Image 1 (tube, helix red, strand yellow):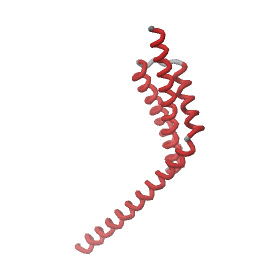
Image 2 (image 1 turned 90 degrees about the vertical axis):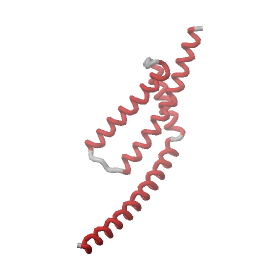
Image 3 (image 1 turned 60 degrees about the vertical axis):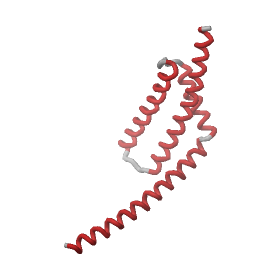
Image 4 (image 1 turned 90 degrees about the horizontal axis):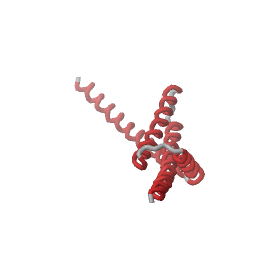
Length: 132
């Protein structure tokens, strides 16, 4: 009975790591699109790359602690890689297109709000200078 429950735990952990690999792929696509839209210096880009690596590591190990007490086995890495490959070949292109649409729309809204805010600020400055 102990062997069956241990094998079940390993299989369940493997399936969860496939899911985690897919989630990491989605987060990475989001990061890739943002990195393309916003221009960063080389140093800042390298810093963000390192931070995204730390975030991915944190996600994997938090999930491992939740699932099996943090035991790292070879099938953990295999599951993350398989999940990432499945994500990449199945829905990555669709996700990137949708993320680009969302970021473009968000940037348009941001620039419109910024333009309105700067106009209002210009009127306030004009009123203040006329009052002096």
